[in-house]
Image 1 (cartoon, rainbow, N blue to C red):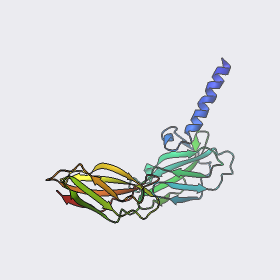
Image 2 (image 1 turned 120 degrees about the vertical axis):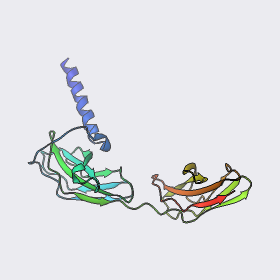
Image 3 (image 1 turned 90 degrees about the vertical axis):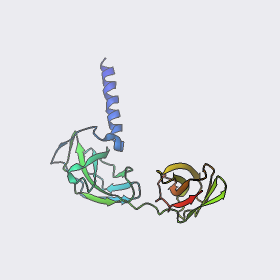
Image 4 (image 1 turned 120 degrees about the horizontal axis):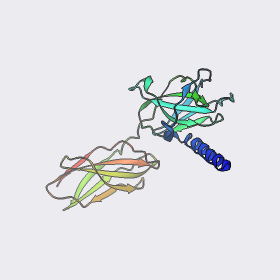
Length: 225
């Protein structure tokens, strides 16, 4: 019986430790009391990309500390509304990546150290702005090539990370709707045969990268049948 209880406790502990390193999944998992004697992280370096932000700090030498908590907020919510977005569950860890950000946005971050259910005071607030979205496709034009057929041509995106294009269409000034996805950076046309005389059609192209990051929408091209 004791062996079974010990095994269950061990498995529960391992599960907790695994969750403790799962980034967004940790939110709300554990509430920490503040221990002012725990040292804070003095300096954190940030490397912002379009949809992720990488962080690096010096190795923690204090063996009493078990890891680092990462908090994120936005300037609009203020410093009192930070939410814990993840943890580095080992004091030897020196990196963390936040993958839940959007292009051209400003975020606030702060870090704490933790040990035995308690954490340090929050460190200095770090302000980070992600990179802007890629520019859109530079040229797009719709042509009525036959009754009930619209041919869409565009200039291939000049960024080599682009590998597909999403075609969106609006009928008679209605909402934008997904039509299809065209694969390949150099592919530059789409034939729309689901059109009817008497309607007005608007098209736009959204280029996407290998990492599924969207560029800005292209300019709108309009055609009436």
